[in-house]
Image 1 (cartoon, rainbow, N blue to C red):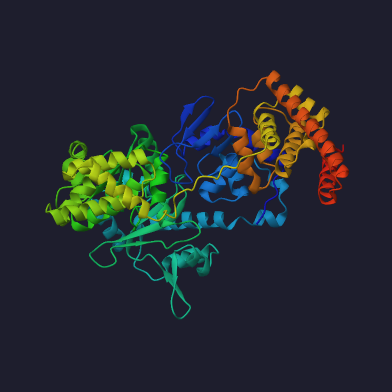
Image 2 (image 1 turned 120 degrees about the vertical axis):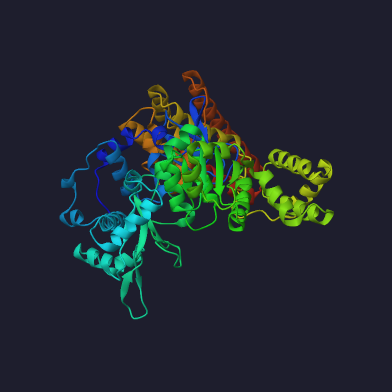
Length: 590
């Protein structure tokens, strides 16, 4: 459903929303000149190519081509609609979106996504009230949490609740709020049986709300109170919840992770609750799935170093090996902390405390050392065993795109295995040439050799975005310079800039322009706007004169070629040149 928000209100929200503040909450940025750079959240990279321009209020990634303003960033990163982004930013900057602008029917409706968040919030409140009710089963649930040493402060901080041992208690509660079973099923709170009826998904379980980075509830996880199976039950994939892109407690861990530059990654809800309770608040958990590249890229926005904290049993070791491949591929400074046998993070921190955990963390292994050690543990140190380990290491390193990084990893691995570094590198390079390009590897944008005129047209558009000086804009208008453009995309961009400038000038002109164009042009405009160039009035006027002079020389050359074609009776060439002249006249017509 579309909500009609006045253009002046959209402009007010855009002006109030500082793109550097918004993006720096999700991406670790470093100042480079006038701009800020960091690792792109939209694709895998090891060298920062994601650039934010606070002056122009735009961003652009030179690696994958993503670009735009603060609105398009949040839309792309969080999968939000334009209206949802507006409402989110309006709330953040305390800007009222007047209800009188909405029609009566629009006032009665909200977007589906917002409705789902509201239902999840209601379900969380319901589970919380169950946990603190007077029933015997609620008492058992509280007793279970007390046995696990989870205090009331953390119960409240994590929003932990309880799903009673009933087939439809949540459904009946939601029905009283006019929420149908069909909606509850779509959001993952109910299951449809073969007879067409519905029942609660979570029953007789401790319930852990799963939130996005902003703290909005996207799904739930439930743990049994005994040894029945399945031990854990998570929400299915929904419009809000995607397990491969979600991390438990990231909303609570993000600040400490930024502060310390490191984040600890585990697998269980109670593991994380206990770690937080003992002061290790820079810890998160995956959600019933192996660590994914998407999750690692999200964490890159909050920490430069990552530590897996897994059990030392076979399941924990196998999960760590799978994660090692992801870390190496993503180029992350990562480590593995295997806990003593018989311990998980929850039991270990309850027994050893914060100091014990910190001491154990000192013995963490680098991700490559761990990967090699696990290979040796499995295959042995015989010739055949070491050959197998080398094969496994080469298979992983073949996914590393950077040659220098790949070489350093190879040297580390060869020394660890007692193999000649040259022989190891030779085998690795051979393996690398045989490996198909991974699907998720970002291919470089092909570079085209542009004609001088096209290059100058790009420079003029870039100049208009980066140096929106009143005298320069006036000169471009006076000379009808845009009419001389041959590239339609650049011409449209320049005309949009002129139109926007006439209504509002300023350093955030680029961001205002992005608000007026289709998605297909946003990245193109952002790229031209974010590039740094030391423009001056003299330089701008020089470019304008040079471009106009080149166009005039082009017209003169064309007339001479037409005369030559007439004299040589080359009717085919003459027709072609006359069409070029007609097109040139059309462009120059004022």
